[in-house]
Length: 402
Ligand code: PMP
Image 1 (cartoon, protein in one colour):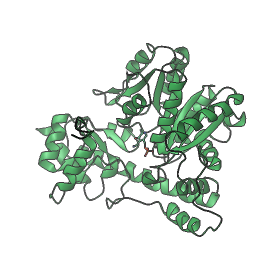
Image 2 (image 1 turned 120 degrees about the vertical axis):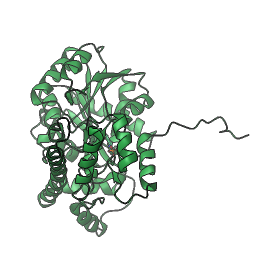
Image 3 (image 1 turned 30 degrees about the vertical axis):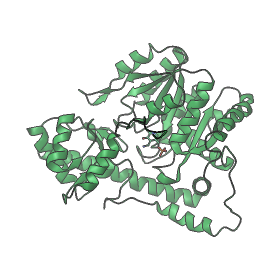
Image 4 (image 1 turned 60 degrees about the vertical axis):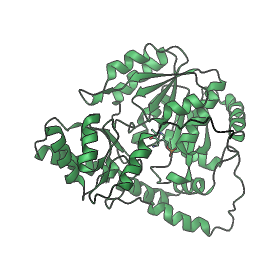
């Protein structure tokens, strides 16, 4: 009899079994459209050239070593990361009403932020319906008692259900935490317009809710990290206290290095030392301290104009390839006279789009064409390339024409 004999097998995660099925599939022209990472036009992972050159430079720097970083990470990193998010002219930065905390990528930043909010007495959190599947698990595991959803996706228009969103947030109890995607909403690809963001800010203020932003794709909507931070900069300019979990997985391609930052903005700078001391306890009890090399890479880039420009070029290379794939897919679908309207593919942005394909249609695409997508119809645009985009479009045409 083992201590673990009663352990039940957990439910398989859709993404993982889909990946396994794809890898085992012997079909030559199989396509994986569930990938959560950037791929080149050759379908390969990409180490950003700016990251490669910095790895070389840093490996020769005799002043660096592998000693532990402080519990809250490199301060130069977190200050630079927060500045990249909020802008040098941000009132929170000028008035020193902020702090940044280096953490284990976006996920770890969400987790330490969520745990801290639980300690502050928060119990209920709201996520968009749908949202990144890990949000619910992560906040519940951090100690939140209840997850509620606000409407987000309208399957008929394939755009945002804005009235539903406002209606749901207008009924939220005071003090509830609301998770908002800064840009490039995962999984739908639909972001609110500037005008809609203002209305969201009004309702969050009116209902006294707490905004917790998730910033996993800064740079992937417009190719420019400044304009992509519009939503959070708006909230800060309106005087909100807020959290934001920043991920450098996608915009630096540092997926497995686990580099992220929790930005905290408060209304009184005197509160910062106490907040940092409490988060120090949380981090100490969880992973002691974060990794070094990736923090040094990001810090170097954000503080060196030559490297920064190279990095911006790298971000534009990725974001423009994704835009091109969206455009080509839509053009081919239109050219084939595919039933339905496909404008949403180019109106959406970032890594993902909700295509509008139903679970039955997705299953057909997997079985007949060996094209692997989540049952929700979410397509990872990064999985498209010039060699497979026609094949995918033709498969969609055949599937929706049935
Ligand atoms: N938030 C969203 C919306 C995401 O899609 C992801 C990963 N794809 C993350 C956070 C976390 O990513 P990471 O932990 O790699 O930074």
